[in-house]
Image (cartoon, rainbow, N blue to C red; front, side):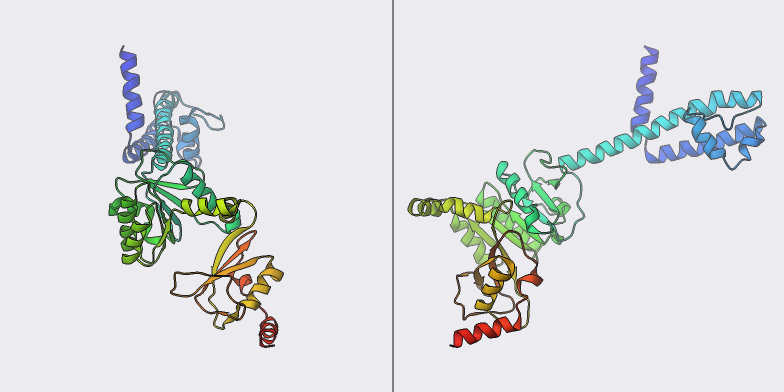
Length: 357
């Protein structure tokens, strides 16, 4: 019974030892060993530059034998002080480090750590397999250099993809201190996808206040709620459910649902992407269309003008793309911005000449 109590006491000391306790114990152990060996007459050990090396090797019971005490009293000091206390201290440090690593990993899995990211993507909400599919699409290699993804949830779950994304669990999506653990104010993109539209609405309003410069996307089952949000926050992109539209379209044009799904799937085949034109000179749509098709093996779909919500699908070839316009295209993978608008002057002149004739 006594041995069992002693073992429990030592285990509690090892587990509960703080860094300060370990440092103080280490200092006492090193100076105590030095003092006792000096009294024992072990001048060769204490005066050697290898004293700390010998103390660590001996205290951890490795004992290479290249240095050893020679006096009887020195051997007693090693037997009763250096090895027993050194072994206990070694076990305490290893145990504390092990528990520290385990605690750090568990905090990450449970979403209790604070992130320190910039220009990352924050997904707010949990919808099971749909959220996992969303993460898979965001991390797809065809999207180029994928940014770090942070999943923020209220649900009582652990990180579903601990090796691929970061994870934060909060009490409320409108609690400032908890939400800032996702580095929300430094995010480049915020995706809000909750089962309840009213939660999505309040979360979107909160995110617009905390991170006004990020691109925010919110999914709504009821399009009317999305219109309400757009009236107050026009910069937030509201995504309505298109299930009814796809149902009607597929009934009239069989295969339309599969077509739309493949265009949105960045993990297989041709996919729809977008790029913003930041140049100074206007580019004719016709020249840009030829450049995409012949130079990049891609297809230009449409153009959204700066400040407008509506996208001009299949624009006229004599129209122009100007600074700030967004171009939508289909390609096998996301194309670099520099390649998208590398239209030669001769190409533009030839196009303008053809249109004039």
